Amino acid sequence: MQQPSTIILGIDPGTVLMGYGIVKITGSRIKLLDMGTLRPGSGEDAYKKLQLIYNTVSGLIIKHKPDVFAIEAPFFGKNVQSMLKLGRAQGVAIAAAMRHGLEVTEYSPKKIKQSVTGNGNASKEQVLKMLQRLLQFEDNPKHFDASDALAVAVCHYFQGNSNPTVSGSKAKGWGDFLKNNPGRVRKT
Image 1: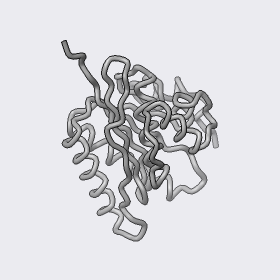
Image 2: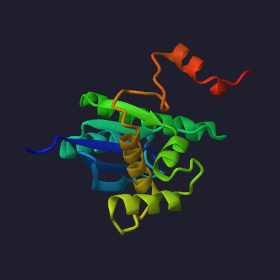
Image 3: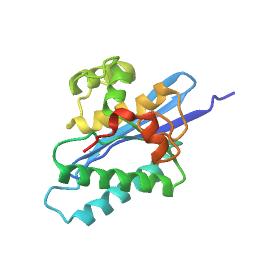
């Protein structure tokens, strides 16, 4: 009898470069199906870039038929415009996943690194090397965005979690999120 399998699509969102990684889980075995990047471009129309992201994520879903969608949460940076663009890219990718009926789980960059390497402050190179060992591939991706996205998918597998979450903890709304994440609230 054939064991059931689960396919996880991981996304590292971005408007200049977006990474994707897809793994297949059968029993306790994890296998790399695909990874790569989408380059919406830096000088293109902002809305056309978002449409390209939506269409690409939809295309990956149609091609690979994932059961679950995991995405990296944006980290808080100093540049407000960059955060806004990144949030839009993330939102469009999530909308594409939801349009196709997928559960969405979001993980912080620190959680992803910790899950894959055991160190939440690991470098991108360390994450890539661990993924190469775990998934038995040797090729280095052209951009770390691809391996970052693959790490998102692997993180979801290691979490053993198929319930939608926000930054790794269940939240039913902003009030619940604030209660579960008091350190993320800044008083001005």
